[in-house]
Amino acid sequence: MGEFVPSATPLPNPPPLRGGGNGGTRDSQGVTMIDFRARLLLSALLSCSLAHTVHADTLHAIGNGLFWHHESGWIFPERIGDFVRIGMPQDVAGSSDVVAHYSKRIADQRVTAVIDIYGADSAINAPTFAAAKKMMQDELGASAYTPPTEAPFEIAAAPSYAGFKAIYKILRDGAPAYRVLYFIDTGAWNVKFQITAPADAADAAALADDFVRAQRWDRLGKMAPDPLTGN
Image (cartoon, rainbow, N blue to C red):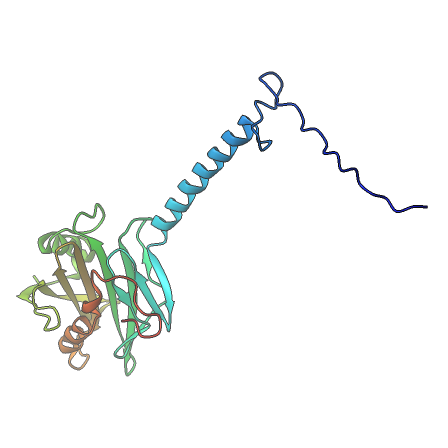
């Protein structure tokens, strides 16, 4: 049997489809208008899905135990001094507000810290120090048995930020304790701390102050940090 040699004569192109039927009008590349519209719809759906995903993922793990809040630039390290982060930071109700929890042990006693980062226009959290105190008082209720003592709070690493703190004497699990509220107004973002320590914990007030001042204040408003250094 001889070798098969294809014909040199090209096959004719199929005739274009015009209207009628389910195929729609076919262009020179064989793509119908229905195909084209379907691709446009799919592209739009994917774009919406991507936009939603980007908005939802306000927190990013960047290695070495660091989490980055990409909207504010804030960094949540795994450890801050002797405080250890409990789990991962979380967004609040799907918003740009985020919260993280830390804990430290002094002998058999536990000191806890909560950090809230939220925009000045947040619809969820307190926009001012007065509002933050009101939220705190509502939360503590009768467990806060004396009015808080208040004072300005300065951060050497960020002297332009307006900081305030209020110290509450409370009962935690029936035992005397301190709850210290810090409210730092940085302009576009507010940073709120709630630190709770047993009343007899050594240097509890200084411990709380040091925790707040040891934060990565230099990261606010910055772009993505180096995943190896957090800088």
